[in-house]
Amino acid sequence: MKVIVTKDYEAMSEAAFRLVKTVVTAKPNAVLGLATGTTPLGLYARMAEDHAACGTSYREIKTVNLDEYVGLGPESDQSYVYFMRKNLFEHLDLPLENTNIANGKAEDLEAECARYNALLATLQQDVQILGIGSNGHIAFNEPGTPFGAETHVVQLAESTIRDNARLFAREEDVPRSALTMGLKNIMHARRVIILANGQNKAKAVKGLVEGPVTESLPASVLQLHPDCTLIIDEAAASLL
Ligand code: GLP
Image (tube, rainbow, N blue to C red; front, side):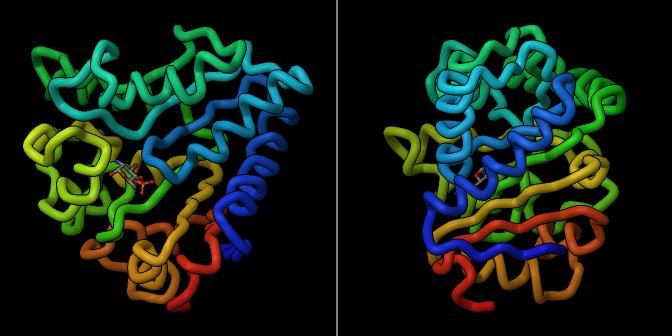
């Protein structure tokens, strides 16, 4: 794993943007694997600015997102599909039909997982962007998830519900379950870029880089990926 430590959040976002722009420029029909959360917001803002200023085109790009809350759809401003549209898609020339996010409002969630999984098999990510949860989760693969897991329904860990409550009016409003790509789907990406900033990620980052490869810290599976770059600020790197 290649580790890049940057001074702060802005420098982390800039370094990630440079890598993503290289991919999009070299391959205008690339498949981008995208993440939600506050971590990639600086990257997405730079992609939007660059599109406006330099005309970098996303017309042929396809995207696949990591996860979605069960029960939430585009009309809910807490859904991940809403987040992606507001923070990235509507600022690019990316056709919405080229974007893919599991449907959290599907009547048959198992069938939706199977559909999304089959789609992922046809859309290998040229680059997969990831954040990391404070408990070491990636996407919504909580500690204990088998490395061989594919897209599945997950009950969220108490720590994840607490972490994500800051984005909801009340903790009770945080959905208790989600649809998520599995670790196997993430490992299938040609290249992975994982971002982390802030002291509250330092312990998870230490496990990711220096710990044993263990299902107790799902992100540690990335030690086995042939092309993974971790970009972190000094606070997130503080325990390394
Ligand atoms: C959620 C998402 C993850 C994300 C994590 C960290 O649980 N499912 O994909 O990496 O939050 O979020 P943040 O970037 O806001 O710290």
